[in-house]
Length: 357
Image: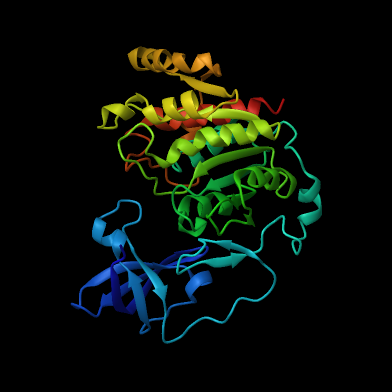
């Protein structure tokens, strides 16, 4: 299940909050590989350090996670963590870690979250893929530049939020007021147990006007109707509605995906919103021109039995996407390669911003 390798750090590469990239020479055959270390978990690797690696993702050639991952710096272990924190994430794995949960007793946010029972009508944009996040944010800010947007990261993809250069870039640019990691995910500005407490924290701790809920990078799909991590989008709609938020469903669409099941409106969106989401949401249909736009409206129509379909114009959104402070990429395709995918997400952000009044 795990491919273990011993290696030695040859040099340091790029870094972003919570992550450092390494060049590592493998002891087994002298080959070099790229590796990632999370200093909060394993300490700060230095050139010359021996490192224990998990090379599973590298061996599998995963597009998102094609790195070896540092499991330990065995000859120079980091100090024990200090301070409060009793939430255990990645539970009962070899790398389980304790974090301070926003709503546990030692947290300064315990009192407001203890009594919180809703998010006061906050728009909650739900999206299948992590790559939709910057596009949704662009759509919100194109309509309401002053809106406070928070990201609530589900645990269907990467567990450490630190892996996401997208989140790091959006935070650095001031496009996000903060992030919340829920379930087994960790590393956000705020840690919570469930998507429900994550939404409450977005509203009452980060003071967000809009929350965007999506899994981290590295989604999992099997090509079957139910076997994909994005099914959690439907559950997020339910959670937002239970907490008296305004669920806004972003459709996953594509004009360029080589897989027919993802062309037009993806079967993932049709399942998550059409079968899993029991609460009513505003499902945003972008008003694209031509035959493809007509196809989207036709394929999304089946969701109108359960949700409110909201057609949103996309004028000006291409320019907003081009101004994104982070690179736009979905399944390896950029804005020019699959413009419709990003316009659909941005249209959902535009609609959420309009709900703010």
